[in-house]
Image (cartoon, rainbow, N blue to C red):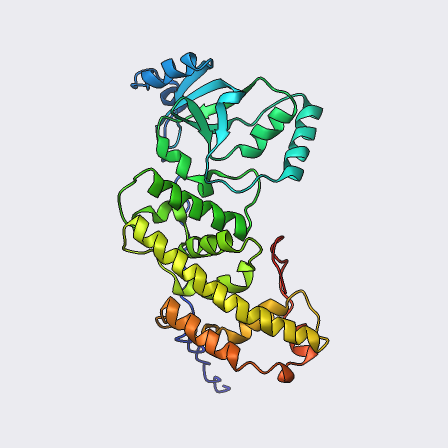
Length: 336
């Protein structure tokens, strides 16, 4: 008999490999939430004050039901359109998107996607329907249909609720920093970390503060390293906001240094929409670190600033930039 060939051993896994998140388990069918009868049941205590307020505001309650997933009460109502407004923290309106929505609604002669709303001091804030609201107003609508929720905190859950138009990095960052400032203005207690579920990602706070100071900031180039060195702060919200503003100033200092390098590269005849991304990637020493605890935000920016001062534009070759490539840039990103 021929001798068996030795069994090849499996290659050892790299210790630096990023651990994968466990795959989400699929829930058992019909294992969660309410039945149709439970959703429509009138045995639950509904928010009578809210129902009366809707009628007092000139609206009408069409139905009341329980959310089929969590059992929370929901008021299906039609509201006077002049009583509805976006939350103060939302991204800026996209006029082209509003016009597309208005055209589609006019062609169908129907409004089929209710906005979500909460009642705040006699008005109704919608965290996820600003474009639909403005499209309806463009068409001259008198009223708008809404899913009215009793919990006012829903107004802060913008990122989770807003699905009608995909957010880019600038929009997400500005919404989060506006939300944080709104929470401080409303006197909400607690540390920044307690609101992490609303902010989603700590880097959005710092980048949002940076966008406030420089609207045409190129956050896409800096986001990879900011995301690695940022975390939610164990500080009261007002103090955390002051820290975010200070960190925004550091990012702008770094951006000024990068812009100077980009200008020098352009003087040498090097042109690319990815010049800034190329320079930041060269300065970003963290891209070579696959594991371990990253340095602090300030230490990272200090080191990148020092590298920017030593950057030799004469050693950059055209093919180096050509290999950079990359995905689409943010609509408002400034590359010079």
